Amino acid sequence: MAETRGMNPVEFLRNASRNSPWVMIAIALHLIVIAGAAIFYTAFEPPAKVEEAVTMKISDRSREEEEIILPPETIDRKSIPKNEEAELVSFEEDVYIPTTEAVPEDLFQDRGDPLADATGGTTGGTAIGVGTVGHAGLRPTPFGGRKLGTGPRKGRAGGPTQATERAVLDGLRWLARHQNEDGSWSPSTLKERCDCDDPAYNPKKPYVTFYDTGLTGLALLCFLGAGFSHESKQDLVDTSMGKRYKIGDIVKKGLQWLVKGQNPDGSFSKERVFMYNEALATMAVTEAFGLTQARFWRDPAQKALNFLQAAQRPSPQGTGLWGWRYASRQEIEQFHRGAGSQDTELLKELYDSDTSVTGWAIMALKSGQLSGLDVNDDNMKGGMAFARFVTQLGGDGKPTGLVGYLDAKGAGAKVTGPHDHFTYHPAVMSALGMCIRIFSEHDPDDPFLRVAADQIIKDLPTISKDKLSLDYYYWYYASLALNQLDGPDAPKKTNRHWGPWNKAMVDALLPLQDKKERSCTNGGWMDLDRWSFDHGGPLYTTAINVLTLQVYYRYENAFGAVKVTNKKKPAAGSANAPADAAKPN
Image 1 (tube, helix red, strand yellow):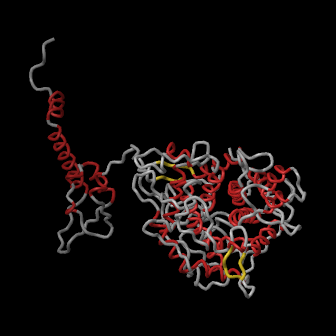
Image 2 (tube, one colour):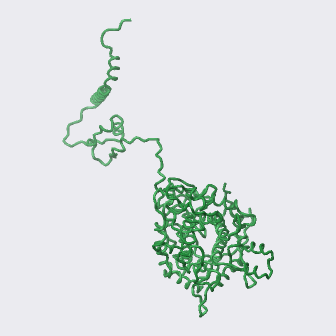
């Protein structure tokens, strides 16, 4: 069929809209405006001309239509009248186009809110931050139950600061980074856990695994001391390595590793029993139960306490109990196969005790008491009897404040061993003697405490040029003892001891913490002291220093606590039994 001659209106409009769309849009707009004006003019009389100015109100609907019809860049903002009812928006908001594309989270940035009150079991961001570590808002417990960054009492100096809490946070990050997949911590696997240009320890050092049980307990105590348990839901973001951890999983895996390796007699040592390992593992499992009252931890904790109490040495006086030493009483008696005999060699070894192991054992038993587990009064009294035995008395019969390692004759003398080129601090035994007395007897009027504190502040923490003055073990126990005696919660606070000690301790510890960005060592204490070369390296130094910086809230003040009585627990399922917590998977 031949084409029709002449212009086809439909085809013309189609070609015009395809070739000149803006022209067609302009024509359409003009037609709409003309049509609207015609309707308006025919429907209403023209308004009378008056002298007063007329103000036109622009409605939100008019603005919406204007923004829909016209591209944002053509909006003439000067034409919008200035009146209080017109809500102007910025150009950025006008042109902003929402997107569903997820923005990658930068795990190298801190996300915690230092001002948040973590009362709901959460923190101020996606990770724990300074001042928001887990003990805020947890159920009240004798340990790990204070808010961070505030000090135990308002208006009283000597509590934690933002700087100390940041150091604790970074220390926990370091520990999380170096935990093994099975839940344990070991100095022998540090290089495997974190391979970097600046390794976290000397790879040529032949660390052994013999102390892994105690070191795992020590690392767990750092998380438990911050109020975290296997139930904790918070995340811990390692901003040095850009990795996220679930804190509850860290704690749960560590505790499960300990419990899985627990022996039928309640001990944890995989080889020969070593009482440092036993005391630290017992503390960790016991405090895990104390924080949550989860029955899953109750039996392992009670079994561990039972073993620890049975391992205590008998008193050389023939009645009662004494202190603890490296080996357990059970092992000594089994070796000699003559328990109760008068064999001279047996008795000498059986009565052998030292102040250091006894201090850890008493702390573990105290944790058991605070957790509501069964601890015999005789065991606490035995530790107190040994503490008196090693206390030096002056010519007037009064304590000098010095304590011996094995007996009073050695008070003030150097405890020898490897790495004796380091400075020895005799007041470390005074601090241990204070802690044994404070946590077993709770007597603020004990005359030994003040004179021992006097000995301690004669030797404040310092960093010598060669760093041979470092003694983290001394700094931990002295901080714990002086905080109890003279800290913000002490009933007889003078600030004579805690004030100068706390300042010196913080001034020494914080600069020693590694702060290399994007480094595996960040947050750890890489400078070793005399005790860490053979017994844990930076794993030991980092954990013990985190515990030192948690001293402000680690335990309630023993002098102000209600006297503990070991009452028989209600039977499971009875009306008075505590609610059972979910068994960790």
